[in-house]
Length: 145
Image (cartoon, rainbow, N blue to C red; front, side, top):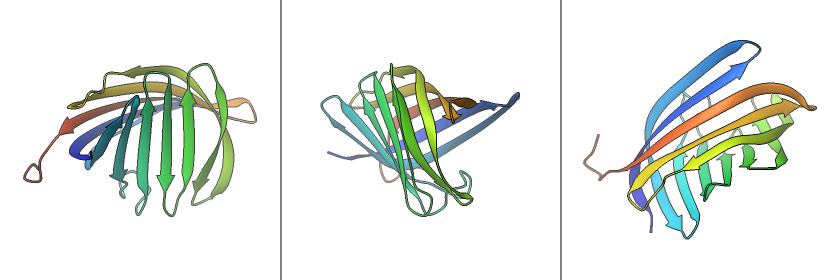
């Protein structure tokens, strides 16, 4: 069963000695199927991906899959103990990235909760960035702002 939720996302990226962060709150859909927790939300101008839909699939505390659909498509697989080659498309072109998990902490429940994960991105095995994502999920009803 899908629930309407309020999703707060904070992303931190460290690359080439610089640190950048973004935080946004959006409405989305939330559902659970056994060990799988899934969040779906629409991207916006603020994130740089207007017209895209993101689906975040969380498998317990060992794997997170971020899939963006629409004009800019991507799929990042963050899995403990594995490095994945993932497809990433931007307005400047498409390329493959290496993705390695640093941490995944999942405290999601039927009512919402939090997921935190860290990962590195590499291009041709050279470190491109270190990333941290913090997501909070809260139930809401249609009247909530």
